[in-house]
Image 1 (cartoon, rainbow, N blue to C red):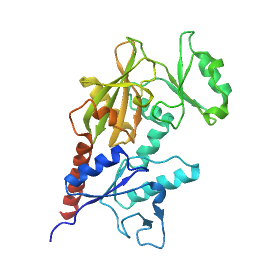
Image 2: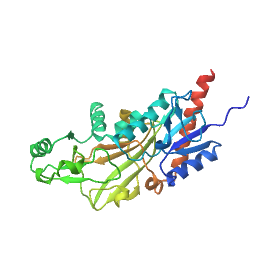
Image 3: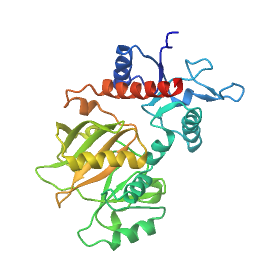
Image 4: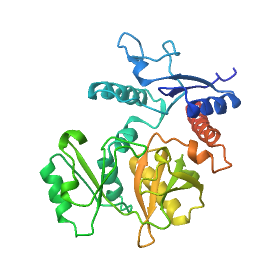
Length: 304
């Protein structure tokens, strides 16, 4: 009997450049793709599977690839991540699953997990009062600086450099949580850091991001530059992705004043349009190939 054609559910809120690239890569491999936002996926206990997924009429996809999750209330986000938890319970392959997304979206948990694994990462604190944040800043030497980041944030939005306690904003402007990460950027004809894309335990591509300011994100004006990373940086990127349980991850690294690399963040829903500009490798095709290999391996295990 011929094997059923695999179908992938792409979780995305918009059919953007990344989603279209994934769709083309899957189509070239003969794989069907449905796309939907998590907000459109439903819990439905009247159904045998307990879920109602757009385009699947009571059946399950072979795999789910999570590209974006829109913001929303605490209740809405909890429900959406619950869909991903439920899919995992139903033995559906999910990249990345809810656990990895939760660990990466919460920067304080990312810092905790990296430090627990002995991965070099800047000292970080997360507290809920201005008084506690001021005490942390005041403990530093006169030259010490911190980066205040939104606990849930991406693309370099909302970053503030904190040189003294008076630089700290009021709690309502940070949603009541102060996540402070030690500032380690070094100016050398501008500022630079690295983005390394990891998929299925392998390095897909890497770039250096160069900017005139310490905020180097491409969405904030950083310029992507082709980069060849050394073994130490490769190992750190792979270890960081593993530490948070992410199969697909964008790992941000920085070379400190001591010349050693350190992991700044791990993104579980990484964009790669900037990275694609500086590599000859088809990133979407690589992600899809890796995903299909895992699907086929699972099918072989079931068949045996």
